[in-house]
Image (cartoon, rainbow, N blue to C red; front, side, top):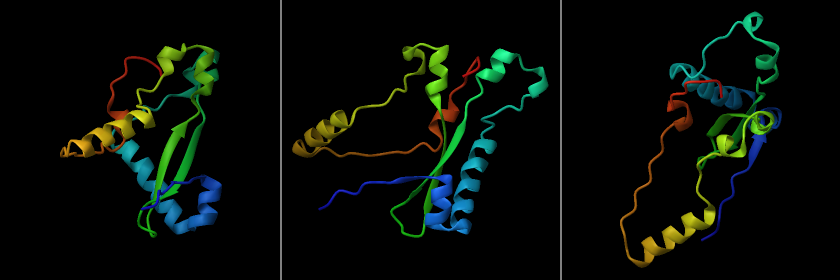
Length: 134
């Protein structure tokens, strides 16, 4: 068996690669999911301090082709680099596992013939309650 690598495309490149209709459908679905989960609260820019305005993050829409040749997946991601100016590395770290840990766990599971189940929580990061500005 071979290994499949997923290639991500910027919005502009995704529109060219997958076509406008398919790309727009995918990007709309991503934005609707965030809206339905009340992920963002509108803020009047005129009420923001200069410091708050400086901390506004740029959003980038990325597109990838799913296993099905006809389906495209979009993800809205943010440039977290700017947050390092006022937040420590520990405060901005994402709790993710290393690929080596996953592969080691899979190897042990296979060797011990364990039953394994995988679950996906759509937009998992937006389910977290925050008491402050991120």
